Amino acid sequence: MARIGFLGLGVMGAPMAGHLQAAGHDVTVYNRTPAKAAAWIATHGGAMAATPALAAKEADFVMACVGNDDDLRGVCLGKDGAFAGMAAGTVFVDHTTVSATVTRALYDTAAKAGISFVDAPISGGQAGAEKGVLSVMCGGDEAAYQRAAPVIDAYAKICKRLGESGAGQLTKMCNQIAIAGLVQGLAESLHFAQKAGLDGAAVVEVISQGAAGSWQMANRYQTMLADQFDHGFAVDWMRKDLGIVLDAADDAGASLPVTALVDQFYKDVQRMGGGRWDTSSLIKRLSSLD
Image (tube, rainbow, N blue to C red; front, side, top):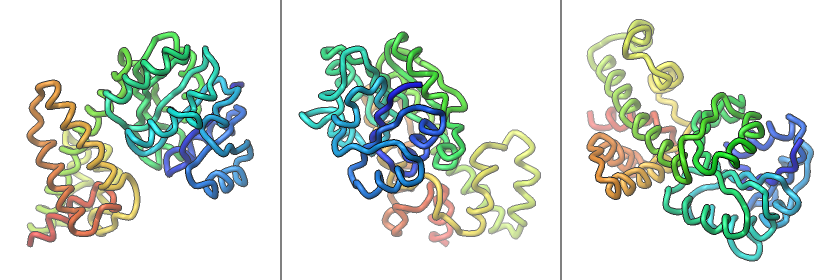
């Protein structure tokens, strides 16, 4: 079993760290709000640290699941950052969805200290984290990935290396591009069914068994029809991710017209006060236009 520092105990990080502790690893957690770390300890055991550097001290692996580029820099760099507490030869695994630019910069900084850095963003939402069935897409050195993969397996349904540093983040962008279009399509389908006087649940029962079926349809249609959006991945988080996607698309010369349009639809949802609603709230935007 490994000694692990885990940084960030939000709706994703807390259950992921819990799976590591349950698997027998020796987990020390850090959270910007110490009360969350104390609550996690009360539930799972393990230990807590006052800084990322202390959480990383003597660890074999350090995992992070924080908010954005700045948050990741904050837990990695400086005298209290994880890199300052990590010994040469250890592995940092970042599960945050961030830009490939910051990933590659931190990879280079870590390498100068003899630390391996694996970008490993996740998909599967809060439910996937709680059940330990996340999809984990990784970038970085092959040797570091091979060391980290058995640890990541504690909360993964699939874990795969896609290439060098940044490849994991670029793959997560592909994931968010696909989701954006799917959710908008599902929202329009259910909205049309309602307007046409059909039973939305009965419609989904039929079309979900054909080519229209998707994870989003199977897991979100009931709450969408019930006008319930207090679960899952928040609109604010999705807009953060899509901003990263659209910036990267400009750099790569990729055309993403549907993604750009859906990003603006999510902006409308934010203006409606739905920044913390689940991303399936796109249907609520459509009903607001009636």
